[in-house]
Image (cartoon, rainbow, N blue to C red; front, side, top):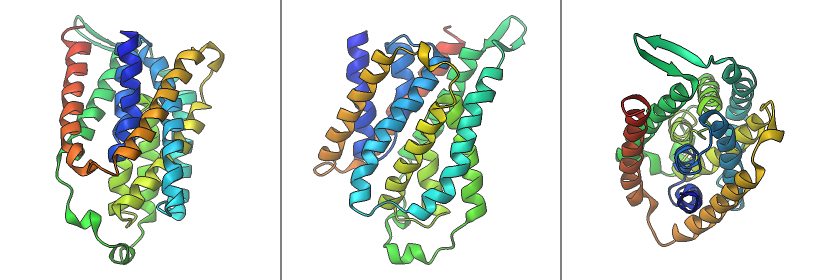
Length: 268
């Protein structure tokens, strides 16, 4: 199972390199179900893996001037603060038993995994749904759109909180916000999203209480394989249209989300 888990770690980066997102949505299932990591600990590991992989991926976007620094500065700080506070205070405050309904009890691990699965289903819908032509309009047309600071700030807080809870990068939430609210063309939204994800994930990781207890060999191994995957994905993206792969990947994420919900609730 460990071998499968390490091979699947490459897919985390491969997805980011090919379609600009979705990699973080694979991290928790790989860590929990294939590598046997505790769900709460897995959300912490995911922050480091997703942050490091996104940081590497953002370098090529910087080189091609596909990162909007102004938008990253507006979106980044509230998101970073939210994820840091969530990891430092909110996650430790979640009780071991969240609530009970008759004989059915939801503990902290089940709560986090089901919440993550719900986010997977949400992400899958955005991947399966066809992208409108407006997202690929020219930069000049996008510049005419008003930069919505309040909504960008609010989105940053929401995404940061969700990232802190479940360890997902939130690219499926950030990219549409940058396109619709920030007026960015799709490619620049992806590059800017990677910068935001890397900053908030890595800085949020610093909110962990006991990093000395982490299995650093496992963590760095998965991170290294994910980085290898993003290099492969970026190379393949020159020959494969990521937009055509996105719906298929979306259906995979949808099935995985349903599987997690059923496994954690009905077949627990």
